[in-house]
Image 1 (cartoon, helix red, strand yellow):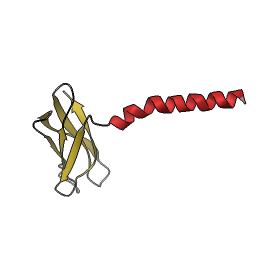
Image 2 (spheres, one colour; image 1 turned 180 degrees about the vertical axis):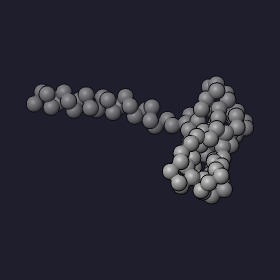
Image 3 (tube, helix red, strand yellow; image 1 turned 45 degrees about the vertical axis):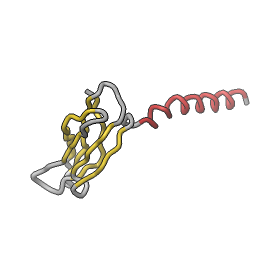
Image 4 (cartoon, one colour; image 1 turned 180 degrees about the horizontal axis):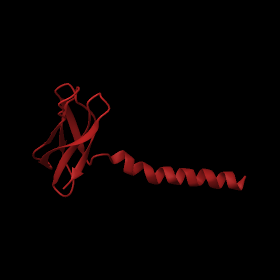
Length: 101
């Protein structure tokens, strides 16, 4: 019984430690998708240092995946814009992340 209680306590502690990092996502950033999911514009309200870059995770429907780096944005200023382009297939954004500069 003590082992079960100890295992449950460890599982709860591990979840509590891991959850805050996952919940933050991009630090106070929000996005707007454009052109039928081919581009993303990311705005950030807070974060250090003050510059960031959106990195779009792209695919073309033919099994090719790549990252497309966007323009450099400024916190509480300019947005970062990343667009998926491809000569073959129909490029789409699967996801994105924010790279802090």
